[in-house]
Amino acid sequence: MALAAGRAMLMRSGVRLGTQAAARGGNGARRFMNHRVVVEPNTVPGVAVIKFKNPPVNSLTLEFLTEFVICLEKLENDKTFRGVVLTSDCPGIFSAGLDLREMCGKNPAHYAEYWRAVQEMWLKVYLSNLVLVAAINGTSPAGGCLIALSCDYRVLADNPRYRMGLNETLLGLVVPFWFKDTLVNTIGHRASERALQLGLLFPPAEALQLGMVDQVVPEDQVQSTALSVMTQWLAIPDHVRQLTKNMIRKATADHLIKHQEADIQNFINFISRDSIQKSLQVYLENLKQKKH
Ligand SMILES: CCCCC/C=C/C(=O)SCCNC(=O)CCNC(=O)[C@H](O)C(C)(C)COP(=O)(O)OP(=O)(O)OC[C@H]1O[C@@H](n2cnc3c(N)ncnc32)[C@H](O)[C@@H]1OP(=O)(O)O
Image 1 (cartoon, rainbow, N blue to C red):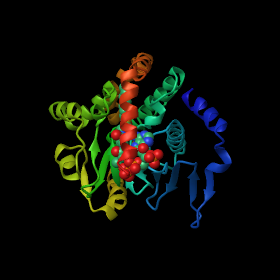
Image 2 (cartoon, helix red, strand yellow; image 1 turned 135 degrees about the vertical axis):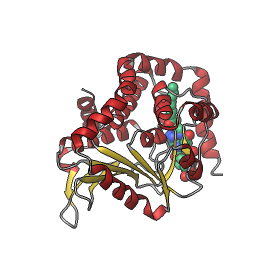
Image 3 (spheres, helix red, strand yellow; image 1 turned 90 degrees about the horizontal axis):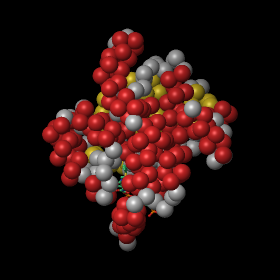
């Protein structure tokens, strides 16, 4: 249903999936390419690398979310793939999180469509049958961090400028319960309580200490480390690993699935408030100002 809507939306915006999506690279390998998400089969058999390519900061626009979900769905349906590495094509930035312009100055119907796309993306990543390893080669606040936290394993580049965390309170936003659940499931209750209320963004050493990431490695080794970790995960038969993953994650995902429509309505009500709109505008304005 969501996928069909997404396809329709992409067709409207001029993205042709079938023909544009498949091209042959120099080594004859198939390379799926949309506008904002590039999928490359890798040298490790059964593993694809998804590169986020939505410059300047890989913000999660509606188009990006739709392409990302469609790419993952294609890989899940293609039985040659068992694992995916998620990484960024934008230097220094994994993802700047939700696109603030999608949440500013729009109408309720747009907010509903956008929030459903965010929910669908999270459900797709969190419950994926594939092994997902995040190769975090840049900063990843809020929604960017959520994507990484929803993978099975996280490798972060050792660069103190790369910060990771759920910083929503710094934008005047209340983190949705399923963002919170994803963090609690990763770093525990007490650490989440502090990190979420203060909107903390952690440098690599602290992210590692908290268990927000599994490994910190030199920047030029992020992708190769992710691929070698993948080999270990793929040594486990898919069906037992998938059933185990599902057993661990199902209750968290079901919580959202059960309250999906109410969560959309909450988002619309919250984001439409004048005070919230004002904070988002000020935050965007400050991002622009810091350049001058
Ligand atoms: C109930 C409501 C719940 C909502 C839950 C929300 C979840 C979220 O994900 S909210 C988004 C949180 N994200 C952030 O706080 C990150 C904001 N961005 C930054 O801190 C920085 O841009 C950076 C560290 C990611 C990159 O810094 P830098 O390389 O210096 O690039 P610029 O700051 O100059 O940004 C370039 C360009 O991109 C625009 N931009 C940045 N982030 C976003 C974004 N999240 N959404 C939309 N646009 C973004 C920025 O405004 C610049 O635009 P121009 O000035 O027009 O070039």
